[in-house]
Picture 1 (cartoon, rainbow, N blue to C red):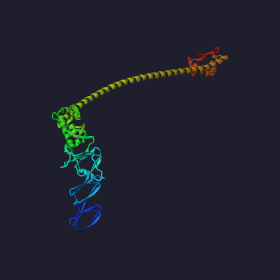
Picture 2 (picture 1 turned 90 degrees about the vertical axis):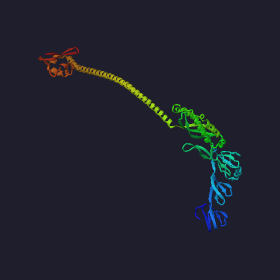
Picture 3 (picture 1 turned 45 degrees about the horizontal axis):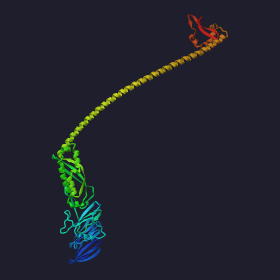
Picture 4 (picture 1 turned 30 degrees about the vertical axis):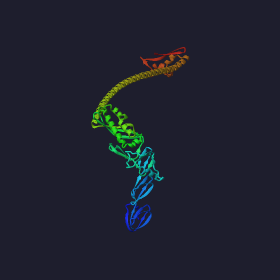
Length: 474
């Protein structure tokens, strides 16, 4: 029996014996008379001179369906979740297909069916969720839809959000529109799809080759924003993108006849670019878009490239312009440097003059302060000398006062001062007092002064309370 599940590749002729068909397997058995029977496991089958073939299992999930082609010519759709074993005695082919899921209201599909398809769709089990058409046009013969010989077709437009599982006789239209390939070239049947997007923000990007009036060429990378305003016109058009592209090429030829290469190299380049993004430049494009059910909203220039000759001329002009700008910038820089140097010299002269003025002011101030200090020092010195003289004078007065008091006392006692001072005893007694009198110091000596053998002695003259002292020779 084994643990692996067997499928249609397992075919055996059994002379006598048995086979176990596990749960999850199915087999078709033909006996010796060619009679067929199908057995779904689990089951143990005994055979004699028979052929057994295990059947391939097909599974459809909730978003899928099984398409069954019977040997009697019938075609059946079995919607998931479902399981079917493909039996060569009953089926020509069995295949599993995904339903078409429309995620938003901006997505739709176009379905064509014959007159019998409505009855087939009504036979679909109620528990299976199937999209219903929101727009149906009966008995429509369109060049864009699939052909059905001898029968009229209906076209239905189904919009999302929903899951569409086709019934018998229903065919979903497959669109084949032109578009840009990986190299950027516009190619027919480049985009093949079944879900048509009707959202308002759609962008058509392509490279537009333009030949100018003087046979120069340049390429403009354009981006057009557009939206759909008529679904019927879009469905009636086989390839609206190709028609729009053809109209754009015609507009490009007309635009190129009004432009020269000089306008692309000179300052008029901005004006040329402004014309490229104006919808008035593309009348045939707008006309073709309108016929296909679209409206062009705006145009945007994403890039501009020149041919080799035009690019070389543009490069030369840019090089010359850059060289001229460089020279002007160099001259301007040199002029600025000279101005800066002159400004620095002027500032240096002003700073030197200001420095000299400050130094002169400082010197004058120092001289003034020095003069004031000298005057103050001199005044202090004079005042000090004056105080010293006054102090000496006061000291001399004090000393003279003591001497005068001594002599006055002697005079009051009736002593003859001249005779007293001429005696050795009187001089001895008075010397200790007279030596303190500053007035008498000029006549005093450590020893008696002898002038020409004469002795100088003081003469004291007393009148009343006053005493005068004088020196005389004896």
